[in-house]
Length: 88
Image (cartoon, rainbow, N blue to C red; front, top):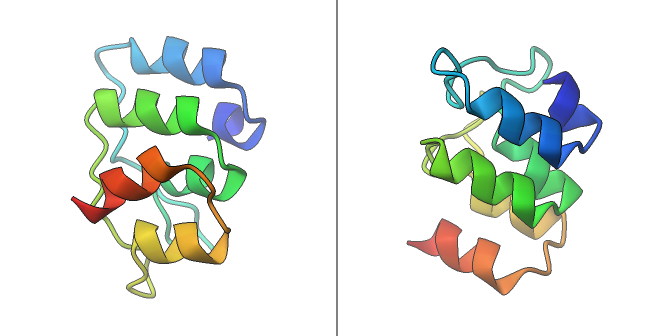
């Protein structure tokens, strides 16, 4: 999560190359959100795509039941390709 929080796409991609890395594992304690929520809030399409390619689940919800699409709307994500991916 440190690389995600630092908005470091190159480090995230490096970590995702490890066979033991699961992009669906782990959650931020306060909000119960998995890794894929971070690039949504940061509007980082490259990190979002890297997590998707590594198998991140776009249907995941935070502990309050909010979807990635809801977070994208709240974060005013301006990338049509991210929104299209979340609508599939």
